[in-house]
Amino acid sequence: DQQVKQNSPSLSVQEGRISILNCDYTNSMFDYFLWYKKYPAEGPTFLISISSIKDKNEDGRFTVFLNKSAKHLSLHIVPSQPGDSAVYFCAASAGGTDKLIFGTGTRLQVFP
Amino acid sequence: DTGVSQDPRHKITKRGQNVTFRCDPISEHNRLYWYRQTLGQGPEFLTYFQNEAQLEKSRLLSDRFSAERPKGSFSTLEIQRTEQGDSAMYLCASSFGRLAVNEQFFGPGTRLTVL
Image 1 (cartoon, rainbow over the protein chains, first blue to last red):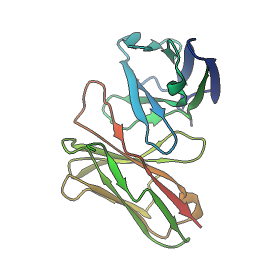
Image 2: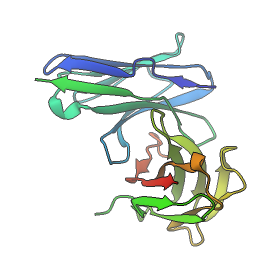
Image 3: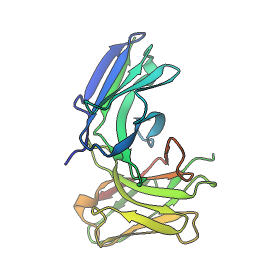
Image 4: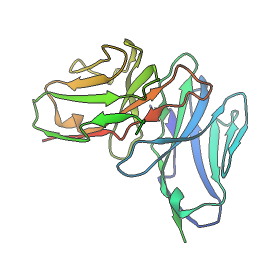
């Protein structure tokens, strides 16, 4: 039962353009959502998060949008840079538990 | 380096052997988590501790798996009688209480290969 889904296994974007990574979830009890970035041979690194009481959170080049009615969130990276090339994981947690439920990841490649 | 550290980084073992991994969290963090990641999947939650108390265990954590955090600092994850299906990356993460962002800091992982 995949509660957090990232349906696009890969995405290729030109440097300077916008990257949009999508994530869907099924559990309506999720109240916190996070994005992590992972480089090869390293652990995931926290990028940005959003609470279910908000619909947008912005941090520099990264913006996360949450659409609760559609159970959908997205990560926007503007402008994309070659150093952004990595695997991006969407994760969610439900109130009262600290465990994170991760999606399967989207591999982003930013080319010059 | 004040991040989460894990040892060893790689472990190759034969089926049926026991293995133990160690995680050292960020020093002021009171919560510690173990996840497992297989190829093409995201990390899957195994268990977590607040200080020395193990608060939650996933059903993925069979009887062959045991985790400890005896003094509320470092943690060990032991797998007994390893099976080929145990081959995966084992990730440790830590956090401080329940911050507003519930941000967990991950270590580099221990890659286990069971032959």
